[in-house]
View 1 (tube, rainbow, N blue to C red):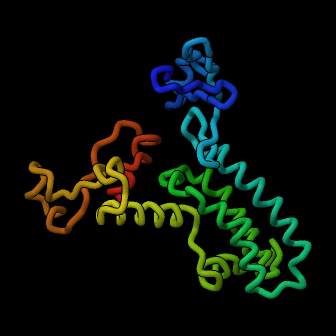
View 2 (view 1 turned 90 degrees about the horizontal axis):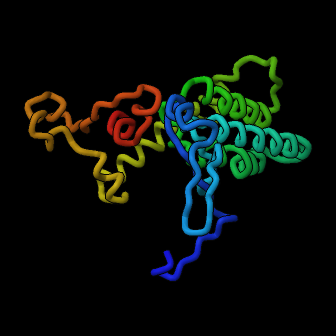
View 3 (view 1 turned 45 degrees about the horizontal axis):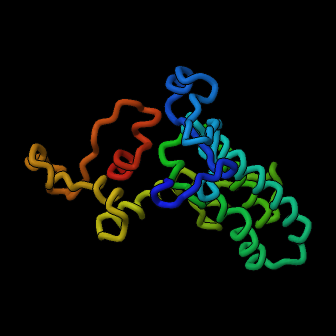
Length: 224
């Protein structure tokens, strides 16, 4: 860094040791410190990158909790001004303050446990009830969300975003580190004789961990 005339700002530098819960248990509470010159970087349990909170155990629980907390707060504020607004204006505000936050980097939720996505589903249901003026005890919520509002569930939203990324990779509109993960089966010499090669499917590599390996883009992307 000194050769490039760069200086480390210790106050704005965060260190995160990420891995499965077994790896985190082996490292201890937060993992070892990192010494860079005269500065010592102390690890933390979570960091925020581009507005997305990432935890050391690679779960999205804290990220989802933050989105739900902020979303419910904004819904309460919007509920106070909902009555004088028409449906179109209310939908615009809801998308600006709530659903856009649900969809922000939701591709990270691909393959996430149902317990995690259910939190966002409840926020989505509360948003739909605000728009329609229905109560929590009223029936027909599924029809309201899927038919009237044309909204996808949270797992389908993440899968749609993932499929869009794969489409961009196949058409050269994505970075090379993502494009390299999308390899057609017909390009793999040992699999050219398979029927999946003629169907223009993508090669899905093997993975070790069902909780983390299947969520990697190299696995979840081609499988989408």
